[in-house]
Image (cartoon, rainbow, N blue to C red; front, side, top):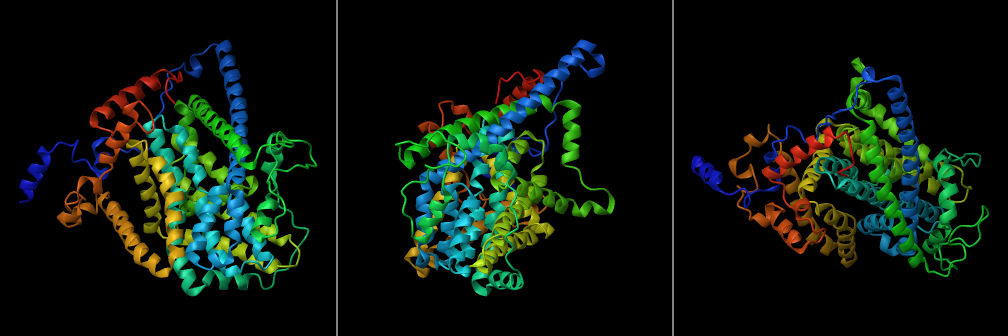
Amino acid sequence: MDDTRQAEKSHKSPKHEMDIVDVEKDTEVDDPWALPDTIDTGKQWNEMTGQEKLKRVVINILKVVLLLGLLYMFICSLDFLSSAFRLLGGKAAGEALSDVELLSNPVAGLMVGVLATVLVQSSSTSTSIIVSMVSADMLPTRLAIPIIMGTNIGTTITNVLVSLGQIGDRDRFRRAFGGATLHDMFNWLTVLVLLPIEVASGYLYRLSGLMVQNINADPNVENPDLLKAVTKPLTGKIIELDNDVIRAIARGDNTTHTLIKFCCEKGEHLFLETSLSDTEVGLILLAMALVTLCTCLVLIVKILQSLLKGAIAKVIRKIVNADLPGILRPITGYVVMLVGAGLTFLVQSSSIFTSTLTPLVGMGVIKVDRVFPLVLGANIGTTFTSILAALASDSTGFRNSLQVSFCHLLFNISGISLWYGIWPARQVPIRMAKKLGSVTADYRWFPIFYIFFVFLFSPMAVFGLSLAGWEYLVGFGVPVLILVIFVITMNLLQSSDRIRPRLPHRLQSFENMGLPLCLRSLQPYDKAVTKLQVLCSCCKCCKLKTKEDVTEDKAERVNYDNKAFEGERL
């Protein structure tokens, strides 16, 4: 009977029976996540004349200088993006965080943390609002913990937006999107495990309370703000925002109606005396930030690709992705994690640090597996900012604000212990992120759906159910959660060549389970999107990847590499 099924399956057209899992296998690529080999078709160094060597050195120096300038503008564009979102949604975020009765529901508090951080595009801003409310005794420390968990999730949307800059190349986009969503997967998985434990036992609240018992405030503690000191000369000339307004709205004592500073000690900015509303200025900044960000990202990728060729690329990749020698090899990831924490602490922003890693992952400079400890380190590094700010605060509400900061730190350490410290569990977020990257490579519209579903629709839906009452949230949310866990588990098992043959025949694929095509594949939705031309008029970039497309992509990549990067593709 199994032979008959296999024979029938072999006669079916792959165009109608191709599920998400089978797409990746049909590509006939040895390992789509392996670091790509670059071909340097230019003259070798020992074959050049003295004049040619001097010319190459000068050109490479100019490229490095231009790269540093573009990186500076890229970081400034992220600052503008954060300012734009704060102007567009900062007041709404402050009002949402001011409703203590609403935040008494931990699930509602979690979703408020996600949505507020998405609106202001800065976990530091949303966290500082929470800390100030706790310090002023307007928000109990225990109710602030779920909101802090939500800020961890909301801040990762920046990585996903940055990954869209590499949508023009399938392989780079696969790696970039996989690397960007790796942070999402870790945060969501950690919340799914630790939020119920915290609600049931309050272990974060109790442990952090023990940690702050014998700590006193120190007004001499300074919080280094190295990155702001570098970017402020440019960003300060464009826009200056007053974050105290958002905090005032959250405390309920706001007396002003704009976030734009109209009195600056360090000079004037572009919108100092504007008559435009916050929304209008926010839209202008948003357009400017997106154009600057995308332009810088594309140019950075092009320059890096022209620099990282041949032997140079191999050496850099070997150093970045190398393990420590001998008996120190098992702790390589934890050393990398400390590096990520230190760099995040220096730049004072986990979003900026992880967003800078995203194009490097897309280009194949850093492996997805290696970027995992880096983003975990960024989670740790971003908590130091609030800890130092709490240590430097006055004695009023000092212990409460410091306890919230320690809760944030303990939450991230607990998540790392669970999803990185245990080897089998470590592979779960990595496999989930790679799965999303593979789906994205085949369906170019999927990232847009992912952003709206994960960061907007799902938090708002869960938030609405939590407002309706626990019975509605449990009655609807639990079955959906069980279904999601089942689908994720089956995808992970079916994608393993070692485990899949051991499963019962019916569980080896969603097709064997008898599910219709619309419930096991994105192909029907892809056809609808292609017909509607939602994203673009070039149908090829939005269509499902077939074997013919793979063959054509391979030919294009060979031609592209042999032209020594002439900029014909993104």
